[in-house]
Length: 88
Image 1 (cartoon, rainbow, N blue to C red):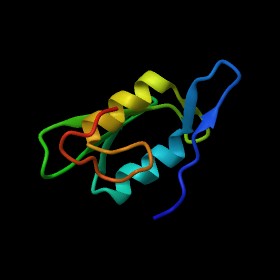
Image 2: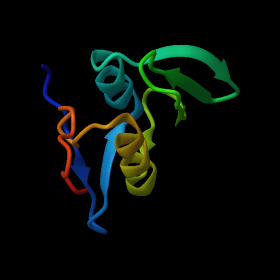
Image 3: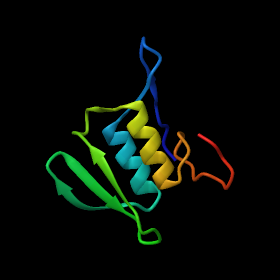
Image 4: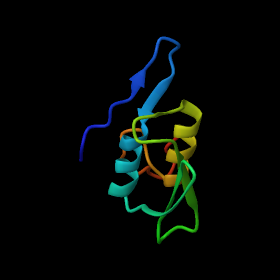
């Protein structure tokens, strides 16, 4: 599995590039089902949920958006699947 690099800015927020988030989702079975405006919609066959990933590949994903996407996808910040009882 590749290395995921979270960037910590001067204000203490964590950011991840959209391209790294997309790679993380795709490695864990999420598929790009459609693109609407600047949002890519991902679905996973085993789950009845969709994840919208905003912005172009070079953009940063904000902390709150990143946490929400990872929680919905069932992933830890390092890209590994979350175990039952893990908190974020």
